[in-house]
Image (cartoon, rainbow, N blue to C red):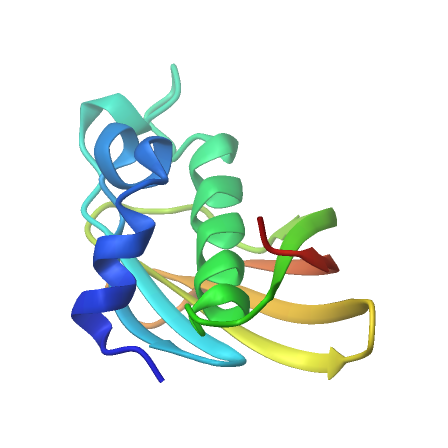
Length: 136
């Protein structure tokens, strides 16, 4: 199993999530991850809410980390589909996203991904289906 620093180093290659958006990997293990973001002006929409794309990027990245953190595997998993359910508005402050595996099959997997505000209130529930393929 790769260390957290090794996983962070590998996922630096996801420039959009790490550099553009600013997401930080907090925890990475097969089937579970936690990532966080300190939103700023770049992340809000015209009415001051957190952009929907930020929720999607958090969820997609948390899923990718949880599913692909075994760096020496000959299999990689990509997002096949995702459904976002917005539960309550973001009211400011740090957000945390947690991805947990629900089903791990031979060629597909299913994850439940949740986004929380600074007080631990659930902001969004995202269901992600992944497709497993050979790592290049």
